Length: 36
Image (cartoon, rainbow, N blue to C red; front, side):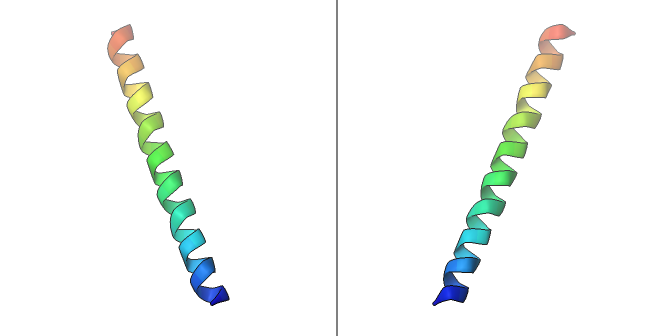
């Protein structure tokens, strides 16, 4: 039970970090496009 919760929590954190990283990259890409 505890192991399952830990795995779910880790997966949620990993997916959140991946999503935030993608949005940050998208933000910088759009910013560079505007600056160019």
